[in-house]
Picture 1 (spheres, rainbow, N blue to C red):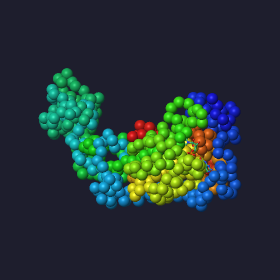
Picture 2: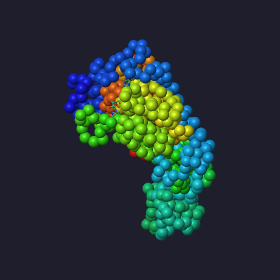
Picture 3: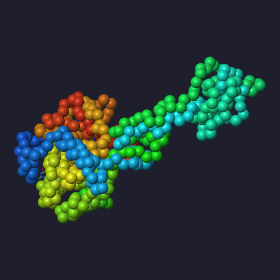
Picture 4: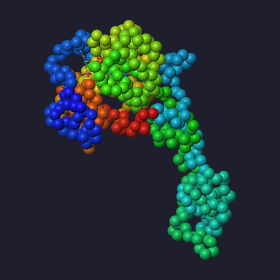
Amino acid sequence: MTAPGTPAGAPAADDDLDVEEALALVREPHSEPQDDGPARSSGGPAVRQPGERPAERHTATSWPHAREIAARAARTARAHGRHGPADTPAGDRHAPVSVPLGDALGLVLAAPLDALTDLPSFDTSAMDGWAVAGPGPWQVREEGVLAGHAQPEPLTDGTAVRIATGARIPADTTAVLRTEHGRTDTQGRLHPTREMFHGQDIRPRGQECRTGDQLLPVGTLVTPAVLGLAAAAGYDTVTVVPRPRAEVLILGDELLTTGLPHDGLIRDALGPMLPPWLRALGADVVAVRRIGDDARALRKAVTASQADLVITTGGTAAGPVDHVHPVLERVGAELLVDGVKVRPGHPMLLARTKEHQHLVGLPGNPLAAVSGLLTLAEPLLRTLAARPAPEPYTLPLKEAVQGHPYDTRLIPVVLRGDHAVPLHYNGPAMLRGIAAADALAVVPPGGARQGEEAELLDLPWATAGIGVCFT
Ligand SMILES: Nc1nc2c(c(=O)[nH]1)N[C@H]1C(S)=C(S)[C@@H](COP(=O)(O)OP(=O)(O)OC[C@H]3O[C@@H](n4cnc5c(N)ncnc54)[C@H](O)[C@@H]3O)O[C@H]1N2
Ligand code: MOO
């Protein structure tokens, strides 16, 4: 079925698109579908849009500033959390926790990783071959030495013993002769086939570290390699910054959780999308609740939530059932960001709902929700989790991108070679572009020319891989 607004000749919305086909969308001339009308995306002076909240033009925050506010809000929450009384749930919620290695991927070290042992913890053979003592030829002992065996008998000058990689070196060994560098004569004596040096192919105890050496500092992101190093260095658990807890409240009576849209009802796209995305951003998603368009239920859910971050979807604008603002007012929340000068997603908001809790209101339009997620939730969660900020980077745009006169635009792009290729289907209600994208390009007010460098926000799965980031 071709969706209304699909340009003639474009693949139908439900076609199976591989990346190349998705890229073909990029090459379409001039017919960027927007379900938002030119008046919003490229309109003239800052006249109030129909239905726009009257104060919005005055209160909307610039996109970079909104991100700073979100990060700062989290810093304040962390500082309070650490200094609060430890016996209250709020007081110790950001205190470091000890977790088994298997649960630590993606978290950040809250204590330095100091070696609990020398590495290697004993003199080790680096190769399969023979441990030898003195210059050859050598008499070879009957019993070999394998990895994991107890301390072998010492060697005497002129003797050798079969040894495996990783096995303990017998006392008085002078070198390890690799299997491929030794020859046994008819009397069973072992000869080297090339010159050897003292200590060859022996990994001495403590070569990599000594007990107590700092292997990694506080603030290191726990990657698969860090897990491996921690295990090698003797750790069963590591001390990490706890994962911030997020709760998702899905608003809207029009949402279906299964089947085809019908009778004005549509499928909920955000329920399936947000929890894994939030996990990729470092959060522990403790609940996903469907609230409908019920202000009282929303208020109860916000009041009851113990999460560090409450995410709402929809209801941010000024429609008859847009309950987010009134409920925030009702619960006495402090609005830190009320609208952001970014398209899509400008009605997004950030509020402090409790001393240790923030709420990010994502607009209901799905790509606008993604924009809110990356603008407000990402810096907030990253800071709560003490994750390092990604290094900012830019790439030249393969094509010009039309800008908004005053607002930043976030445009899904694929990264091809040295360029970012803008994707079409980037209207606020569309996920078709972002689903094929590697990153979002940050297009400043006024737009960007072909070849102009644009800042890029990587999508977590494009850089880290699903197995790494979805923990
Ligand atoms: N008079 C005005 N109307 C609107 C404005 C405005 O400034 N003045 N802003 C528009 C913009 S921009 C956006 S974005 C949306 C924000 O709307 P809300 O956050 O209030 O969201 P809803 O009205 O609840 O929904 C908007 C749209 O998104 C669909 N939706 C909602 N939730 C989901 C979901 N989980 N999965 C899929 N689709 C969802 C919903 O059905 C609506 O079509 O407001 C504009 N209006
Ligand atoms: O156009 Mo709205 O900005 O979708 O977010």
